[in-house]
Image (tube, rainbow, N blue to C red; front, side):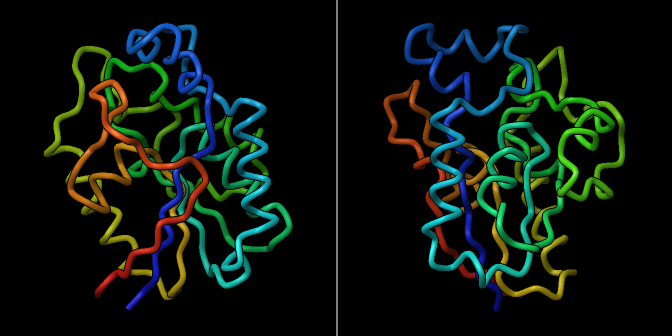
Length: 197
């Protein structure tokens, strides 16, 4: 049995802009691979200084999107915990929504020295599609890829830093979207689940 701690990234640019502009912000090419806001940085740094489980975490698996990488870096700032970036942890849907398109691998390696990108196999984001949005079946395949990866790891306490839709589908088989009037997952708030081998 492994303990997983599912953490949504801190508040990012598109989360704030959604409140004024609505869903079209997700498709705006000016907001590509969106970054954390100052509030998002504060949230993630706060979790890193107050989370009682921080030093029990053996491994961090992180979405390869900028806002999640920033969140991981901030939370685990004062630890030596291994942080691995994985494309399968990116937000749903992969396609059309420019905020969910990954930056080039070389750019991320240059910016995030602490994070291991060896499991990212392509320079450019080949999961993201500029013609159509990803299906739920595709998301579920990515979830299975994550589960297979976890099964192959020796670590027992794993933090997973990802996104609202990915975590919702992983945890509850349900995606809560604010644009549908749902209550989304909290930013920088760990949700613990047990992973059965």
